[in-house]
Length: 474
Image (cartoon, rainbow, N blue to C red; front, side):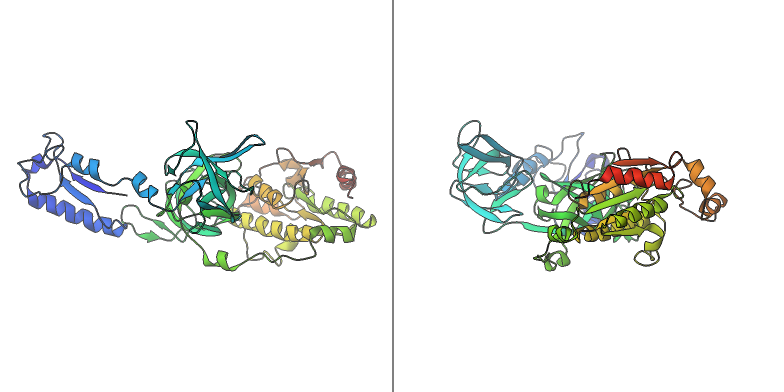
């Protein structure tokens, strides 16, 4: 947080003050443009040793500190962090026996003593510190930079990923943010795709919107962009699937700095810095209702399910899903079929077929299917849904066991030979761009709950196979 402008090789310009002053002025203009308000300029010669450890007679016009004197006296981050409010992300819970329960972590900022009132976030529950435990014995005080185990005076819930903070000045909790993102992957960012976001000891699912702008690192100009490519730096809004405890990166690097991880490859694709939470995240609250999903399901005498049919165009998804729904209707089950083409006539008629639009298409369908499952329905969806990440995103929206992935496994050559709608012919001629299987990829499921081979099965046989697999429904 402290900048030194060390102007080297002053010996090559005869220790000319005018040259030094011009460099300082040029840097000051640049520094102001990127938000650096103060810096310490020092004229030096690494070769001759001028102003490194001792004041040089060659620069009588310079009255500031030597480089080493400044570096040894400047206030460093550890000192600054210790003066801030107490924050400690919980790394793990230590309970070797029934008589001891402690919460271990590295103190990110501030200090703590036994008897201090603390708050656990995001739950907001409060207690006081009873002990500060280390391998070398209990401490009377712990400060930023120390790894300790804290014990509470009360039995309250606290787990890995929670943040223990001073009770009367806690950090914020939110699920929507503006952030600066540095993209580090060869594959461009896909707006709307879910990534793992890791911040401190918290790990959540997050989606990033199209950037507000990217930064030209040479001119600091703000440029319009639809995505972030390799090494791009941009500002964008992101949303997490559940609230996280945070502080702006400018105030706390531990609770403000994050990384994004690709869910399928586990590659770290980006690093970022949170600026602030969005106002809408603070003003929109979940409204609890007395009649929940369990009551809706009980009224229908069935367990809610989402039967997610995925496969190439022409594989038979809609035909088989329709057959399954007819059989469920004969069994007096309450169902609804969401078909890819039908949805694009209404809810998703504003979306095209780019990767970003396909991701948004599935996100919306997933949210609608979840609401229907909350109403106690058995929901059938027939969508190509070509990307594993988005299918997993929908799975994560639901309780365990309610998402059933059904892979309608049909080879490309068979699906293309059927070509009921003439889409493959258009794609091969170049009249239809971004068509799955031709010029856009299809990522087949690796471990679907159900697989049907439409080369070996008729639609009726496939439907009967699926019904047997999902039984019992209650």
